[in-house]
Structures are given as C-alpha cells and as structure tokens.
Length: 447
Ligand SMILES: O=C([O-])[C@@H](O)[C@@H](O)[C@H](O)[C@@H](O)C(=O)[O-]
Ligand SMILES: [Mg+2]
Image (cartoon, rainbow, N blue to C red):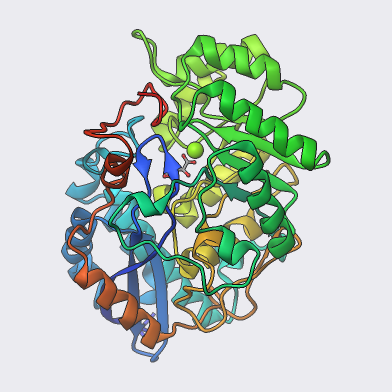
C-alpha cells in the first residue's frame, strides 16, 4: 500500500460552452451551458478527470470534499468514496423531485460532486493499472461501442432574444448549420433528424417533448417514423402529460415506439411512480425514466409498483460505479439498461462510453447524449466519436482521453464572464412569452 500513488492536488474548474435555443418543459436552453471539471493529479504525475453539471452549491461541496481527496491513497479509492458517502452532505441530500428543470430544485448536488470525483479517481486507477475504466467497473468491459440516440429538440427562433446564441452561418449545410436554426414543426424536426443521421448514423431517436400540445408532439414522432420506418423513435414529455393524456397517446403509439419516457408524473395526490404503473398496465408500453427512480430508495419503490422498464441511470446522478450496479440489476432482473443526459462536454461523453461498455447483457437501449449539440467544443485532444449510431470507447487506459488545457482555460474564461452561472431555462423563454413561468403539468408553449 505504501507504493500507492497519492492524490496531490484537486483542481475544480467550472467551464462553459455554447448551446442552441432548445426547448423543453423548463423553457429554452440558454446560449451558454455550464459544467464542472474535476482534475486530480497524483504523485506518479498522472492526471485523472471527471465532469458533472455545474451549480454554485456543487462547487461549494467539491471544495468541502477537497481535504478528503487530497492526500488520499489512490488504491484506497473504496475507502475514500465510502467516507464521502457517509459525510453529512449526503444525509442532507433531498430526494429527487419531478421538477428537474428548476435550478433551485435540482437535488443531485451531492451525487453530482461525488460523481466527478469518482470518475477522476477511476481515470487515475485505470492509468495505474493500464486498464480502461470499463474494466474497473464490477461487470468489466463487455463491448467496444455502444448504441446512442439522436436527441432531437424543437428549436426556438434565437433572433427573438438578445442572448448570444451562435448562428452557425459560417458552417456548411448539414447538421452543424441546422442545429442553430428554428425547428418548430414536424417537417423541421425531420430535417434535423436527416442531418443527424447523415453526420452520426443514428438508428434511434428521442424527441424532447413537454413543449407543444401532446397531439403535436405525437404527430412529430409519427412523422419521424414515416421518414425512418426502421428507426426506434420515442418522446419524452418530462411528465407534463396527465395520466389520461398519457394513456391516450400511449395507445396511439403502442407497437410503434419501443418505450415512452416519463409520459406522466405526480397528479391529484398520486405519485409519479403510481401513475406510471397505471400507464404501463393500461397501454402495455414500456416506460423509461430519469425522473422518478434516481436513487436506491426511489428505484426500490418504482420496481415494487412495476412502474418502469428502463431506469435511465445517469452516471452524474448515480456515479459511474452505482450506475454500473443499476445496469447489473437490470441484467439480472429483466429490465433494460439506459442512460439519461444533460448538455455536456466530451469528458462526460467518455464517462458514458465506459458505463455503456461495462453494462452486462444485451438488453440495452440506445444511451442519451446531448453531445451532437456541442460537438466541436471538445475539451480533450481526441474526443470519443459517434459513428454509425454507436459511441466508440476511446482506446487507452483510464477514460482514454487527454485534456486539452488551452481549451479548458478558454471554457473557464467563458464561465467567469457569465452574468448568470446556474442553469435557468426560464430566461430565454421569457423572450417568447411575457412573464413565462414553469409549470410541471403544462408543456412550455401551452400557455
Ligand atoms: O436538456 C434538456 O432540455 C432536457 O430536458 C434535460 O434537461 C433532461 O434532464 C433530460 O434530457 C431528460 O431526459 O429528461
Ligand atoms: Mg427524460
């Protein structure tokens, strides 16, 4: 043990990148998105890295954890993480609520902080043992590439705001240009899908719903299916449909979609787990969720109620090792493994690639990634690639990525210059609808 490298320093770097005016139930994505990069350096001179969603309270937590991490032995990773998990901060973690798009409600702070640290430690251990992180997760590496989906959004007209959205006008036609243009109807979303297929080869799509009336979003799903009859297409209204609507739309889409994601949620005194269980019984449509089964206790209740088929265990909500345990449970218990995402850089893309590569069994649905909206803003020298609808596991030990420190400093400078550093999707939306306010039970444009 005395030969174990020791963590010498932990650098916590908030960073920002650019985004399009993507719509969801919480409003419109800001022209900037923010993330936190954790960089650990050990006594052997290696660097390990992790990425997580950014919030001021996550930054504070990471600072609080610094004394636990600096000076710790790399080989005692289990003991270090156990200490983190038995800290007061975890006890104070509130349970996950449905209101995922309201910054002050976002409950994942402890897990977000722990996830970035754990990923960076695993990256370092991988370098020490000359093994990919996928091999350090309990089920070990199972594959070299994982199916990922084309994550489609309705896109608002950025010109109606005074925000600094990129224009894409200097880009050639195709995905890199189209991803900045307004896309508010089925035809425009189908064009986005065509461009995404051309660029990345997707066979799976997810439409971010919770924006327009359910009928409109179902029509967009049907338009995508008509254009790509072989594809697997789903929609995620983030629980904005009532149970009655969800059952109606579910019956309309039954047999055409592989699953629906969070079609309904808590209402009239019933929890989201209860309404999803009723939805499944009424429609037979499998249910995926990133809203009501995001920790062990929630997952337990969701499974007891037979409410879900696909827990989308995001490594930033669970940590990579815990998300791998969820994948093992899915394999043993007849569920399907999947993964949720938010806007992210390529360090998270590598984390997701290793998680998917280690998921046992063949019941794996295409993983979510927002990367196609950020592609080109990499913080590493050779970001993992999406080809033919698959995210390829980067070669090399650890996470298989090498930080580009110049780009990290630039992204840090963008973050420092931001007036508003926490995610707040209401801001952009208020340019479209005066005094717009979030409502968990209404699509964002239905006002
Ligand atoms: O990026 C978005 O707008 C999504 O709505 C994201 O915030 C969600 O967390 C997520 O992708 C989801 O599947 O619910
Ligand atoms: Mg979702």
